[in-house]
Structure formats: structure tokens, C-alpha cells
Length: 139
Ligand SMILES: [Zn+2]
Image (tube, rainbow, N blue to C red):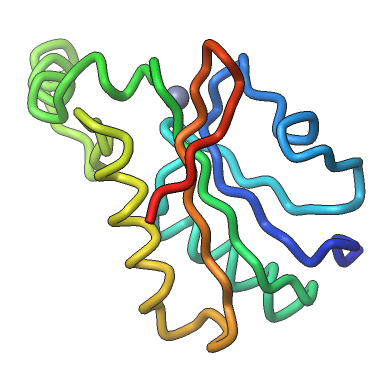
């Protein structure tokens, strides 16, 4: 079923984020893609491309947030700990970040230059203040 607002939201899996309340949306209005950090990965791009090409969405909102778990460790720390415990490193990266604004800017740029997304895609990125539940748009 095509989302009636033709919007996809990429955001963090953080249990405090209610995406529909945040944007005043209702069920059926948007696709919501969530992962640790709300970062744009290859799999997020896969879903966004299917969302656009098969279910007629266009606009993409990226929402990362203050107090994110991904700011509490580094990629190297996490990976080395995993390797010490399991004897191997994962093929994936954690996308751990020090500053969510830097991460949002990178993800906006990646989506704006992706060859498979619609050429008229509008991408906007935000940092959600998890305390006040307010959004700051990132340019
Ligand atoms: Zn988070």
C-alpha cells in the first residue's frame, strides 16, 4: 500500500522515538525505516529505492538524535571487543558517531547523490533533541 503522504522516514531504533507523534502523522501515511542510529546504510537505500519505485514515495526525512547510543562508543572499540569475545570481526560497521549533525550531513549527501533514487527526491535531515522532543533541521 503506497503511503498517502509519499514520505519515508529514516530514524533510530531508540525506544523513546515515536515517529508518528513527532511529525503528527498517522498509520498509512509514511514508510518508517529504523536501525541503530537512523543511519543511511546500503540496506536503507535498498528499502528507499523499493519504496520510491514500487510504492510511489518521494520525500525522505532523516532523523538522528541527541543521547544516541551510537555516541557512547567508537567503531574500533566495539569491533575489538566483539573480536576478543568471538574470535572474529564483523563484516559490517557500527556507524558509531561523535556528533549526530556530522552523520546527518553525510547521509543527506549520500541520498542526494544516489543513482537509484528518483531525481526529484527531496531529502531533509534533523537532529531530535530527545529531552525536549524538538527537531533541529540540519543544512
Ligand atoms: Zn539512537
